[in-house]
Length: 405
Image 1 (cartoon, one colour):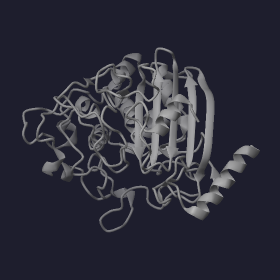
Image 2 (image 1 turned 90 degrees about the vertical axis):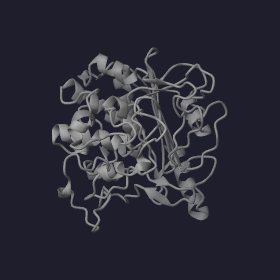
Image 3 (image 1 turned 30 degrees about the vertical axis):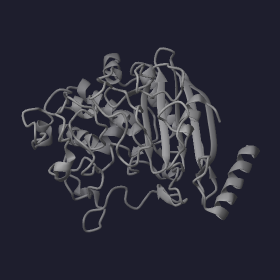
Image 4 (image 1 turned 135 degrees about the vertical axis):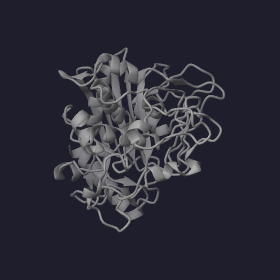
C-alpha cells in the first residue's frame, strides 16, 4: 500500500509540474488475469484521476472503447435465443425504413453482416455525433456512408456505424432503450457495476471513473469530479438533455453501443469468463454454448482483396495486419497467414476477444478457450503509443498482453 501511494503521489506531482502525459508510460494501467473459476492476478499502476491524485484500481470503471461491441453482441445473442431477433433477417423490417446499399438495392443487410463488419458501410459520414433529438437515418442518407466499391457480404471493413444500427434494431424489437437493455440482458445478471454513457451507473460508481487524457494532458472523457456527468448523451439541437425525448429505434447512437461501455477491468474479466464458460459464469447461465460458438466462429478471414486489416477511423491505433479474422463482434488472434500481424502475445496461440482504442485509451480482452485462461487490460494517456515490436498492436499492448511491466 505504501509503495502504491508513493507512486501515485509522485506521478501526480510530476504531471502537475510538467503537464506532460505523452510519455513512454501510461497515466494508468490495469491488468487482470483470470481462468474459468475466477481472477488469478490483478496488477494496477498509476492514476485514475491526475487532478485528484487518485490511484487506479481493478474496480474503477473506464470507457472501454470497442470492447463495447463484443458486449453488445452478447446481448444480441440473448435476444436471438429469445426469438426476438434473427441474425439473418433483413434489418429494414425492424428499423422501419429501408437499409440498402445504393448500388446494391437487391441485397438485404442483416444483423450477421452488421456485427461482422461486412455490411458495406463505412464511417466516412460519421457515426456518433447524432444529437438527442436527431435521427440515425440521416447519416445513412449520406453517400459517404457506403463503400462504393463493394457489395454487402463481400468485403470486411471495420465500421463503427454498424453498431448504432444494431442498437436501433434492438430497441425496435423490444421497445426498450439500449442502455437499459444492456443492463437487463448482460451487466446486471453478471453482477457488473457498469453502464453505457453513465446514465444507469450509480453515483458511487461514477465517482471512481477513470479519466481519459489527450497528448497535452487535457481530460477528454469522464472527468466526472466525483459525480455523474450533467448530460450522459449528445445534447439536443437546442442544447437540452431531456431523455424523455428518446424514441425507440430512432437514434441508436445515443448511448454509444460502439464504444461507450463503462466497465472495470474486473467486470471485463467476467465477460471473458463468460466466453470461457460457454455462456455461464459462477452458476449464472447467460447464453447457450451454441450461441457462444456462433459469436467466436470466424465469418471473415483475410485474403488479398477481401477486406481491410486495420481500423480506418482516426481514434484507432491499429496498423495493417491488426485484424485478420473476425466473428460476431469478436476478433480472433494469431492468424497463420502472410500479412497478418494480429498476435500481441507473440506465441501463435489462437485467442478470441476484442481490442479497443479511443481518447488515449488502449484496451484488450483476450481468452484462450482451449487453455481456459484469459486477460483483460487497459492503459490510459497513450494517444500516440509507440509501434509494437512483433505485431500490428502498440508496444504497450504487447507489454500488457505478455505481462511485461
